[in-house]
Image (cartoon, rainbow, N blue to C red; front, side, top):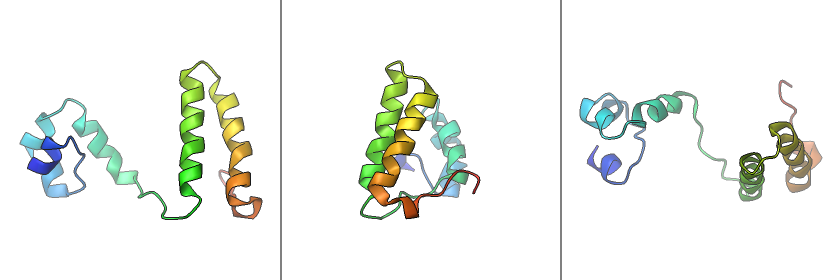
Length: 93
């Protein structure tokens, strides 16, 4: 728990995540800790850093004023070039 607090980490340990001292060290920690129920580790694949960069570019575009739809379309266009079209799965497929 001390490590999570000192380094401002979100704890993946349930015993720490339920501790009142942990939950009170930051106003947002409870909300972010709750997100871990559906979180996954980043894939350890060679192309992932490029995919991650494309995600960051899309998020930055939205924050700079682009529409979410335009940013998503730009991201969608980049991913097949990064990982190959045969490795892309459409949402809901």
